[in-house]
Length: 178
Image 1 (cartoon, rainbow, N blue to C red):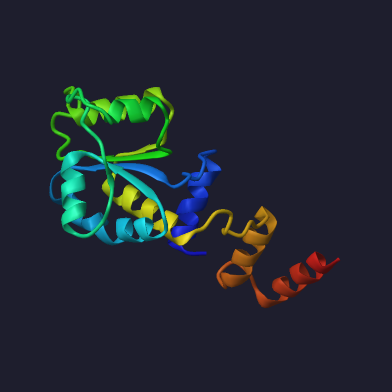
Image 2 (image 1 turned 135 degrees about the vertical axis):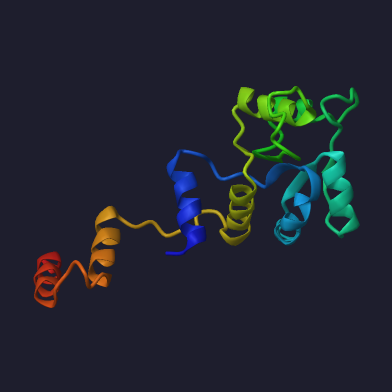
């Protein structure tokens, strides 16, 4: 098992659904560059990437297409609040420019508030967002093998020489073969 499989499995274990190829991405400041390659792969895989104006300009300048949305403070359509209220996206990645004024009613705050109000999964941590988007790019639907707890723990037990002596391994393997 690797980091991506473990992370994605933990997401699914919390009864979250796998997004159905429609995500909203709004990344503040100079953090956008970290997402370029992953978003490029998701676009190539056919994902619909909805963005706010700043993120859209940055992605467009770097050859990645997205569906631009007006901010909550702009009263034009397609508006980010309408898209969220109509549940047209399955996941929202909103990385604030800074967290000093997190309680202020900025456009980012409104995105996060609407995500919670409409029960759409929201990721606000840069590292978690990047890792999760990479998981979406790596794993196709239902591609993670399911293991029983017993299979997982016994395998890990046999791989750890500190906890299991050779004779004990033989006895356990024999017992499992019954």
